Structure formats: C-alpha cells, structure tokens
Length: 64
Image (cartoon, rainbow, N blue to C red; front, top):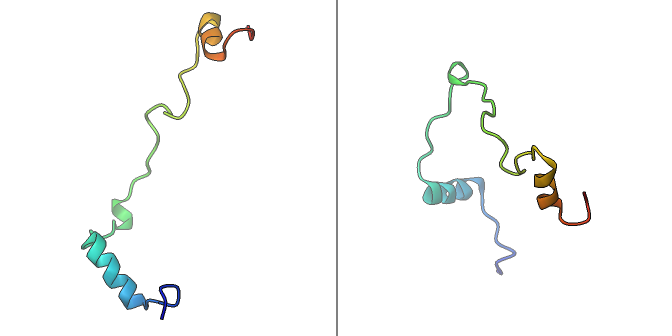
C-alpha cells in the first residue's frame, strides 16, 4: 500500500485532530454571540493622502 492509497476513517481523522490541536473549547451558545464590527482602519491599504505632494510621493514622477 502506498501513501496515496491510504485512506483514514472519520474516527482516525478525529483522533489525529485531537492529537494535533488538543481539546477544543465548547462552542458559544447563540445567546452568547455578538455581532462584530470592524473598528480599526484597514491595514491592507495606505492612509489616504491629504495633499498633492503626498500623492506625488506615492505615485512617482510624471504622474502629477
């Protein structure tokens, strides 16, 4: 049997998850859940430039 032929049962996968991650905490009950909102500014985009000189620095020469 090669490694690609090996197939685990659901019980074996559950055991491997338990070995790797340990005991999971209990799930939150519906009455304990809260809606989350994004309060911090996005980190994947730079802050908007407030003046043309800042835009020129970001975009490079010949764009302004």
